[in-house]
Length: 419
Image (cartoon, rainbow, N blue to C red; front, side):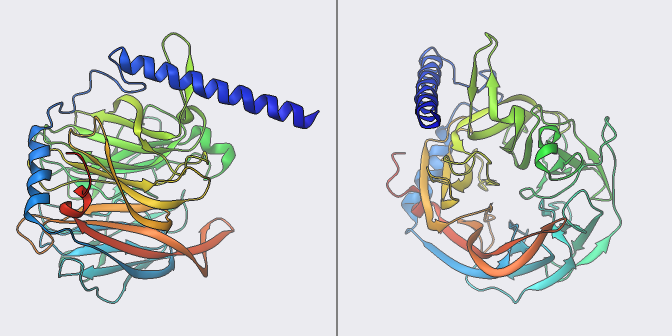
């Protein structure tokens, strides 16, 4: 009886999936895009972005390489300083940094910043050149410390800081998010990074109450204000990017509850294993237009737990965006890929696999014009598991991962793409 019921349930599930796919296709053909708002302020024209990518691909020879840079740890961020130095920040119980001053060809020995778990959101303050690293004493909820480098990532020292509660009285945690931003335009110089409310903790029972959000600072990182929550509960581990028109794209992993489904105005519903996005036009204080990004997977599509991904905007006048995650139909986190958008994230039609094999959390950064890093894209990611056990929660240990850095140029990324 169990077998018969299981087969019947599986058949009904396939039928429901097929109906959902047909429903999504109908929405697309009818002029809308399933789960994506049509009043998006993101740029619709891709002429300048296409021209940038084509020009870069034509003037360069394709370049690509991968190096192992850490053993047995977790939680990557990669940033490029104002001088063009590349910093890799990694650590589940001890946060460490490796630095390259020659565009990623060679790396310094690892420098220990602090004991604790990496909070992500490493931020290059483009007004001062300082770099901020966020360290929490243990997996959140936990005390936060910020460490600042005033010498381009060579040394680190603690700085005084405070994180103010939001309107609900919640003090947001930092772990674990993609690198932070320095905003330009109306909120010139504001520091902004993703953050998260963990409720009672990182437990399955609490995940329906988790939500992602952001924190911002207008005093160079001394005081952090909380944004309004992301409009969907069950989200967390996110990435931000600012577009040329000043708006900010919020791209989030989904974990639980409401984040795994979308209910339409007519009462129909669909499940998703894709990323959630929202937009801000007020410097990251509020978020609107929450929707699925159907082009972008949230982790292996045979699983239902999502995966931390990287997001970057190239150093160009056009809105050329890159996103990284695993590209695998099964249950395991494997095969890291990069998706390319040439219209500010409205569509992500171009993809290239960067690495085959184990692939966990990943972070993206683009080189800066006029520095040794110009023209390079950096993807820092968790590769194969190691034998070293690391503590990532209250009494919770897991195997660390080899930290690996891939660097490539647009000519390599664009190979074989129909642009």
